[in-house]
Each structure stands twice: as structure tokens, then as C-alpha cells.
Length: 216
Image (cartoon, rainbow, N blue to C red):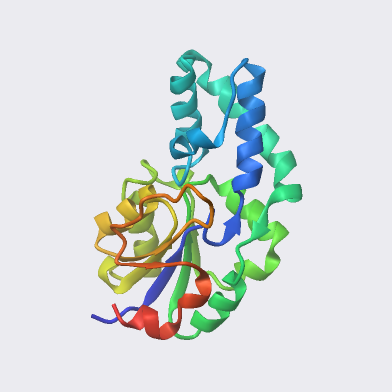
């Protein structure tokens, strides 16, 4: 087996947008008289804003307010993004290490406007990625395999020749469903997500090298 491409998730692997999304969901929930806390993070991690909003309004018992909740969360996020979103430590260095050895792609459950927003804030990222795929460009977002299948198609590389770097159970499940290998990036927070089905787990991006990628 020859690995030809490395596929990066966006949120949690390339950029740390969790503080911005946490505050966006908190503000949206507050508008309806509810609280959003870390205990509800499993309803929103790695699946995109549309599914996240749907999960939250079902949890709060207001599914008929999904469109309004989604709109509020997205609008709040747009304002919070520039203040709170940062690059994941070591991501640019990792991209530099891998460039020239593998094709690089970005695959996210987030909609296209969020990917472009990140490219605008962090222009040093865009040059690394040969292709990018957003959640609103496929029928089903993670944990369905659609995003990664489209990524492989755009790269013109078979899924089994790709390695995905993911931080969420939904992302790992999606990657494995395509036949891609998966490196799970462990959450630095106290409530670690279960990414035990990944082929390899790392504590940080410094542990990933071209040799590690080629070992699959």
C-alpha cells in the first residue's frame, strides 16, 4: 500500500474554532431561554453547524425553531470567529513537512463559507491544499463517508491510498467507512472524545511525520 495523500479535518485539527462555536451556541440557546454547556459538546463536535443546530433544538425540545436557531448560531459565529479562532499549534509546520511528499486536502463538515473564512484569516493555509471539500457540497456530512469520498475523487486518488487526520468520533467513523487510514488527534481538554477506532492516536501534531504517514 502506498500512501499518496493526507486529508486534514478543519475544526480541531487545522484551526481551533471550538471557543467561537461554544459561544455562538451559548448565545443562540440563551435567546430561547436555554443553557449550552460543555456537557452538550457531544451533540455538536465534528458534524457541522446544520446537524449541530438540529441536535441542540431537539435536545431543548424546540425542533420547530431549528431554522431560527441555526441562523442565530451562524450569525454569532461570524462575529466571534475573528476574535476567538486560532491555528492548531504545529499545523503549519506539519503541512510544511508533508508538502512535496503527499498531496494535501482539507475536508470539513462545515459549510463552504467557513472554509473560505478560515482561508481569509489564515492565508498561509490555502497554498498547502490541492483541494478542499465542505459539508454543504455533499448530501450527508460526517459520520457519513460522503465528504471523504468526494475528496478522494477530486484528488484522483483511491481512498485506500489516503490518510485522514481527525479529532472527532464522527470524523474517524467517516474516514474508516471509506477505507482510508485515520490518525486520531486526541483532544487536549479534560473530556476526551472516543477516537479509539482510529488506526493511530497522537497527542499533538508534532508526532506526525512523513515516516508515520508512509507506515500505513
